[in-house]
Length: 550
Ligand SMILES: C[S@@+](CC[C@H](N)C(=O)[O-])C[C@H]1O[C@@H](n2cnc3c(N)ncnc32)[C@H](O)[C@@H]1O
Image (cartoon, rainbow, N blue to C red; front, side, top):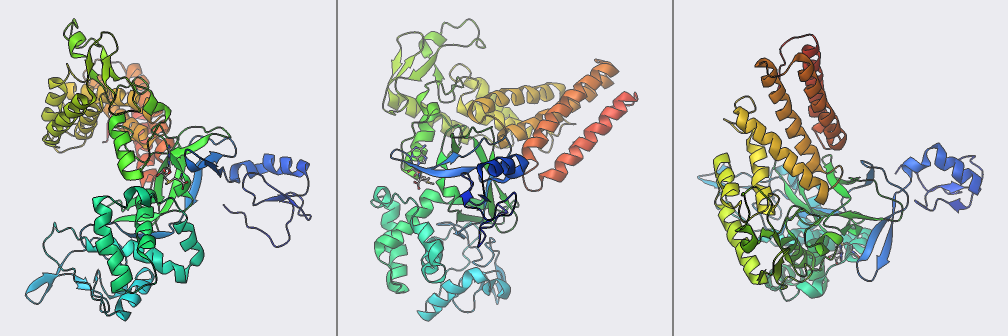
């Protein structure tokens, strides 16, 4: 937002003294209604803050669109109020957040340590990082020395659970306003306080802050901060996997959840700015939502995860729909009707929950009277998940066999089949031995079909410009271009046919570009792909061979 509040408000249009603010962003002044309308038309409509925060007894605070929002529009860009380590993890630098590698020190391997507080760090430069100063000071004042040391590459350290809450607590002195912003976020401490995790935190985190460091906070405040992290924090990862942190964004914390969200988020730059992008047009007055879970999970799994991690029962439209918008992501075929199907490929009757908002409700066939208990459904689901876990991540044969083996039980868009299809899309065309050029015609066609299958699912559960749709379109267009090349070279299609097919690929690539160009590092990749495909089109036009660059 580039507008600044001025000392003496001036009309944005005529610069005369003004006392009326824009109802949307409340940052811009106008002298009259007429100038407000003019300013809006002249461009403020593209800059005005697109949301306001409302309160409801059911959802608490939530975001509402203050004007129509266009698909692809960046609704919010925010820097973190606090960034720090996750509750547990491998040793990481408290300066830059990078995962640490040990060094040879004497005849042993260990991490470089902060010369003051002894926490593992990258080097002397990180030791002096601004973010580490306050915590280092309080620890050294209490003569506390960290005891984390290198104990093997896979070691997970629980000691890191104290750092992020400590950073928030220390803000009370250094940035009182931000501390207040954070402490006023939803915590759900009352739901978590008696869980095994919070019993451990009471013993470790709270004791560390109150007794070891002697900071003037009570146990409840310390645990509340931990619980605020669990309710509101975002996982932040470096693209190369070198950092895995958690961060709180005060305004973005106001985004409520939907199992069919209308935004997606991205991280921008090295300082972990978070941005939300509208995946669909959002009408003025509509809620702006994000997803806190995996949209590709079935309702049972999503609701359970939301209950455990975010302490609420989701009753969004998708959760209420026993077919999940016809995707049947969480359903299985009725074993009675299924036995009467003429061919395995014909769609059989499905078992659907008699009340999707109650995980104990029985499941009933959509056609016959067959009923199974909820726990049978949950057991079956867990058994299939275990079966899937055993599959080798690099073996397409194992994923294909999984889909085949359960084709009499699982709908083609059951969430486990969707996971298997997603794995296949990633392997076909990308993995060693399965690059597009190496794929058989059969597997290339299979990849195209799989992309179409998942695009249908994406349209229902993550409609619009989701990252899922964008990456599927990229996969699809690459496979289609390769297919065109092969068909042209073997004389299956004419030059005109090749041109038509390449144009179809170009349309997909252009849509993928509209969706993904805001993602870090994607712009150049997408521009290169468009250039390559344009070159192919030109070559096809000139009657040359179609060359596909993967
Ligand atoms: C990140 S906060 C969102 C802001 C929150 N509503 C507030 O008032 O501070 C997450 C919490 O909001 C509530 N919430 C978010 N989405 C919800 C939904 N779809 N239905 C019910 N509660 C929801 C839950 O209490 C959840 O733990």
